[in-house]
Image 1 (cartoon, one colour):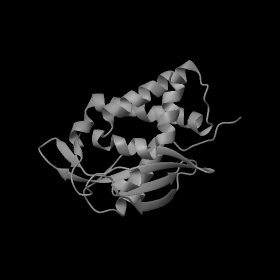
Image 2 (image 1 turned 180 degrees about the horizontal axis):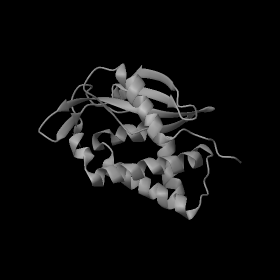
Image 3 (image 1 turned 180 degrees about the vertical axis):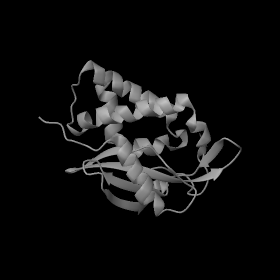
Image 4 (image 1 turned 45 degrees about the vertical axis):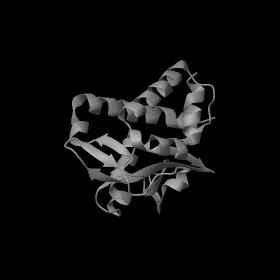
Length: 180
């Protein structure tokens, strides 16, 4: 079965930065993409969370208040919807910070940039396998799935990880299944 062609993840992230993010209030943090399969649509969801600049070098992230959907095959912006914690099955106060995340300047050092580049390469490698619903994959893909999970935990916004898991349950279950 031929693999579905998807847009490069960095291009899709740029689209999410330009289109939905420009319609949002200031002081919003855009999370990493979450792959979703919705019938025949292959989407990447982006969470947008209000942020509060706290002590130098850290941000306080509140629960996501918006979700944007980008078509992974065409790269077209599909929809921006309001969200609240209960939409994810979570019980957090809407405007209270969940926890801290590092600021943009801290995400500009070479180690972080290299790790993020590797995470983006992993998206590009894993998404076609996920879309094809492959349960049996080559060893290199298994290793990449494990590495992806570790890098997302390292680089991702720890306060938002329950939201990633809730929205992307199918994707994260698939990653854990193929990586054993």
